[in-house]
Amino acid sequence: MLKFLKYYFYIIILLSTKSMASLNPEAERYISSMINKHVPYQVSVLNNNFIINNVNAYPPGKLTAMFAKFLIDNNLVKNKVFADIGSGCFALGIIAAKNGARTIIGSDISEHAIQCAKDNLILHGITKNMYLFNGEGVLPLLPKFLGKIDILVSGVPWDNLSKNEFNGIIPARQSISRAFYDVDNALIKDIMLQGFNLLSNQGRIFITSSLRKIQRIEQLCSEYQLNCKILKGEDIHNDGNTHYILEITRIK
Image 1 (cartoon, rainbow, N blue to C red):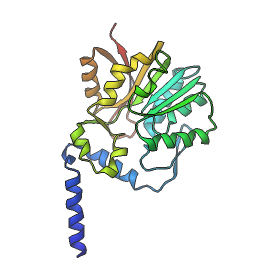
Image 2: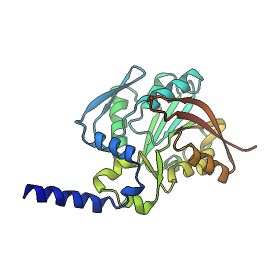
Image 3: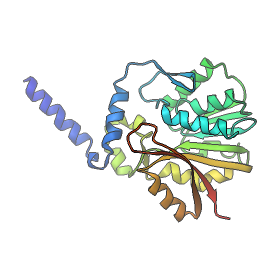
Image 4: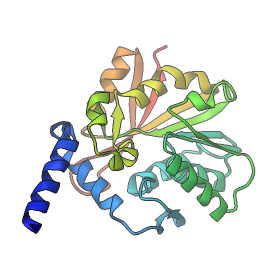
């Protein structure tokens, strides 16, 4: 009987993930490890502790640390209006605030991430000049911050996935899966098409990428007549998959 139940459960999983052939196996393993973690737990980024209180909130890691250090070292946060699209637990925003950012803004499609961000703002004692929005892409920041953002950043999801494929993912995994799959390239397209409307006169857009997704980003930049410049690259996990910090600019 037990053997039959195991087989039945396996069949249900296969049917529920009919798009599995299009999913990234590495991402799926990572998602499985995340949703099986005991919460709450803490992670540290540049000697700043962050609490993760829900398995559906994406935790910051080595790429976040690389991005934060780059921004600080290049004087891209002090006295700036700083916005993170897809902000997760808001580690970048909080680190920016602690390094002199004038205002920090976070936006995330996940309500779990927004709650996690609120908890971390409290943990770090940040109560002023900060905004959080639960919504998709840059839309929640319009029109309030039109022409006001000095630094706009985003950690772009690993892979593109069609809406039909995404809907084939088990519902319990869909929330955290958005951190790994950009459905119909919606987030990166939104940043490229709408993000510039948020920028101040000297405003800039920075995103993260990796070796396996940089071609997708370059293709979209070409389609929308934008420049994509690699500013930093590092094999942060020592696995041959170099991670990059890119600046997206308009072709003059």
